Length: 331
Image (cartoon, rainbow, N blue to C red; front, side):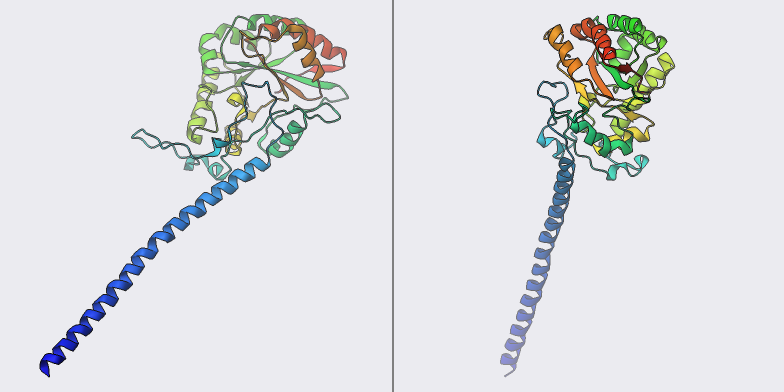
């Protein structure tokens, strides 16, 4: 009897141990799916943000606007991990306030090929309304008192021997322009920049290192913007309050950052394939194209490396004025 009682007690203890082990194992297994589910939720939110960004996108970019291409669809995918031992500056770090909470996806945009009854690109009209809260300019201010206003802007990545001729024409025609400078241009062409400022033109910020604002952390973009601003101020005593994103690539986060830095993001409502010195458009065709796209508040993006632009600029200014347009400064 005692032996039987001991055997029954042992069996009961073994059964209890098995039950306890089984319950612990279940709890350990159920923890993993919970964590995985949370990750899926985060991924879904990211996808939702991407859809929100693309829903506000404008018409496709002009086919020949190759320096300012549409960012690839993969541009909103997570960037590869930083291989450096030092962590990358976090997007939306504390010193950038709530900017990091805004959408970070690249906005696909371009002036497109659709125009309203005033010959303005409908994409730019929509983008102006959508992002004007950040001070953005896809179109300049319309003329006051009935005149039609045009704004000339030039991107200065490097010098190709044409800028002096462009400045000669602007001085002869008494037409103002904005020159968006990169760090390389500031260091390599100070005499031309001094002349721009002396002759009443506006110096704009085109970033120090020509970074893609949608591919770097906000803190790095902020530093790059400040570097160029400080270079221009120290070298020429000018304040760069207008900012043009390299290749026109931007996100809502980047717009907010530029505004927080006391600058105005300036885009364009006209651009064409003028940036390759070895593949310049024919003068007649280029002039006809510039004239055909005239509209009130037009912001022309031109490149000073273009020999065609240097040759036709005076004729374009004359033709625009003959149609009742005036040339004004963006500042």
